[in-house]
Amino acid sequence: MTRTLVVVTHHGDKWKLEMLCKSMSAFLDTCDVHIVYNEIKSKYDEWYEWFEKINSSYLKRFNVTTCQKKIDVNSGWISQQILKILVSKDIRTPEYVLLDSKNFFIKKSNINEIVNTKPTEGWLKLDQVQWTKLCCEKLGLKLQLCLRANDTPYVLKTDVARKLVREFGTDKDFIDWFNTISIRAYISPAEFILYELFEIKSGNRDTNGVDTGNNTTLWSYRISNDNMDLQQLVDYIKFRSEKYDVSISGFHRSLHDLLSQKDIEYMLRALDLEFLLPDSVSGPF
Image (tube, rainbow, N blue to C red; front, side):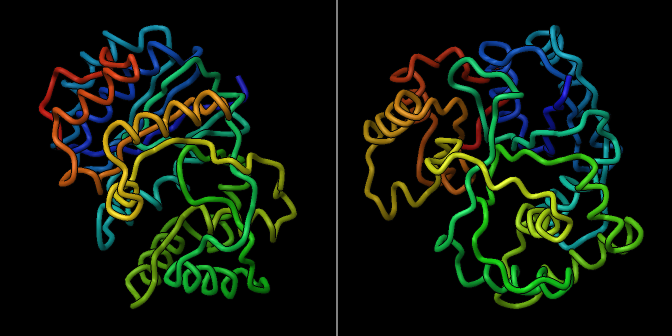
């Protein structure tokens, strides 16, 4: 196999991770899967007892490995981003595809057919521009603002990710730099932007990709800015799935206070995906 599916998760993501696993069972061709648990060891033991049941129920045909990693940084969000790069040391395939627990498959998919988005300009917010400037300075690049979307799914070249870490020195050097820069004012850290900038520096960037997006993950702005109701959210997912063959969707955490469990159930029924609803733990909605 040429790719591994990687998910960095934590204790509060069990509902979403179960949904992802159910969707993998239904739609994803067999592949290697590596799950990184981003919590302390004592919590990992409890989580693994839960995950073993999920694994045996939905992931029997996959080659699944898990590990526990916890690094001392300012937040779990920062730790998650750093681990998405550091995990490259544990990957044995030339590339790996990162998904978040929030993602789930909605139609037949093969991990080797997932592609990144095409680099484009104009989407970076001011705090992301500031992050990009600092990364370019660190890597000795002129400012680059034509970049891929900083979202999952995201395909990384394993060797390039390893070399990115070595560019900083040791793992600790990489962690310390990322953590220190991330807490500056008016900065929004983005691990995939840093990775892509290193691809540019090392001459490894592939500028091919989809210009129509590679997921239909729902974020709060679809409701608060675009004023979409539940049926419009469903129609958005259906349209992009059918027209652009998008096979991955998701529910971002920004929706937790905007949607109810019944809302989620309504949308999944409308998408003929009600069977993906988790039943081992209660949901965050």
